[in-house]
Image (cartoon, rainbow, N blue to C red):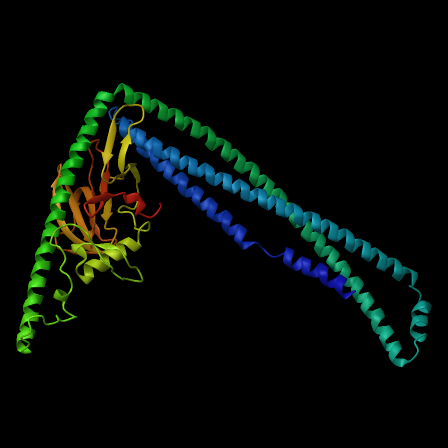
Length: 455
């Protein structure tokens, strides 16, 4: 009897508990949907601006392609939301069926107890049951049993009412989930239609690019000239930094040799093959004085067997390199808003035979947007390229370049941190806000999107 009473109560207790993990998942999906929709709205606004100039087809294509990618992410998000609702509906249907079965069992047991109580309702039967006890203790037990049986019937009736309420609530939640799914399906259908429209719009822009290939070639030549000028300036600035590091390294080794020689003379050691000081830098095989990386074993934070170069000859330079490497894929974006309009590497322009080469990424954003440093480092150069300014920051053996700035807030030799405002975004050739962001290490340009955190 106790088991029969306990099980319905236990089921009621657990069934009434909320599902925080599922609710959190729903909230996360809807938050992501709002963010993606806002990104699409911003891209539509940017697209309206580019349409004012017929010669900006390349910018239009970049925006539309990015919008297509965001739209597809939004649709994937909606699909995940539909799967979540389907799982929720399935779980609620199981709960509803279980409650129905449990309610039927409770009603059947309660009906049997009522029938039994009706058959034994007379005072004579009650007294006969008590007086038929073999002794006084047995009579007490029988009286306690009858009292407990009446209490059980009352509890059973309350359990039936609670189970009925829970079943009603479950059915209501199930209907709400089905209504929610219907709304999400409508949204999915709407987004799929807009996606098809975006694809048609992209095809139209690609056709325009074919018709305006001469103008497009001129645009690409301008960008290529800008790229080469920027590359030469960056190479020169980094080469100067390497040469300075060489000079300091040679000076350091010369001073250390002189100190070692003075110690040897003071100690009166005239042996020609005296063992060098183990703590001396000169006791280590000197690094080649050139710009080439050197393979060695460096242990920092448990890392070993990595390649280092002359720019990591000081503890500060090595620490900044390691910190930069450890944040690969997690570096903050240099601007708070915007999107990648031109990606790293060599790309064929759709619909034409033309290609473009980028040593970094082009980030389209509002003119005047603050540009922030992505990691701790030191400004080693500030220079002009095509009537705009560039800031080059060193992070050990890594360098980050921020180009096409209308103004600069830092100067050469200044220590900066992640988040330090370096300057403001200027207009590009098409009079749109655009930042050129590049990462260089060991004379190689790296893909910034592999180092920046996902947006």
